[in-house]
Length: 68
Image 1 (cartoon, helix red, strand yellow):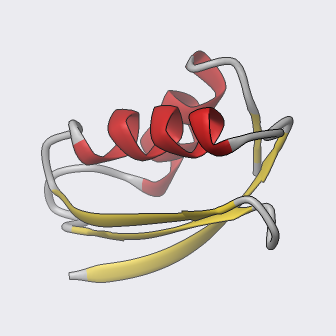
Image 2: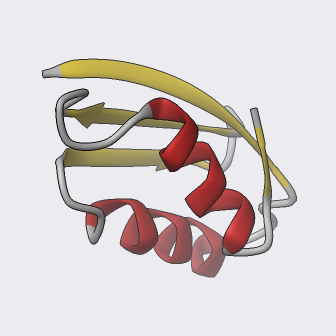
């Protein structure tokens, strides 16, 4: 398992947190996703053999948020 913190922009409410958390949690290889509105980030534990950090960032961007 690998852990990564992804900076997320454009979040404004609990709905945003649920949306991003749901998108990340549904991805194969993701063990957990903790999204923080206050910190403006998502902490994701994932299996790098199954999913890449770039794919996680792309999924957040596809959900309509900025990610890096």
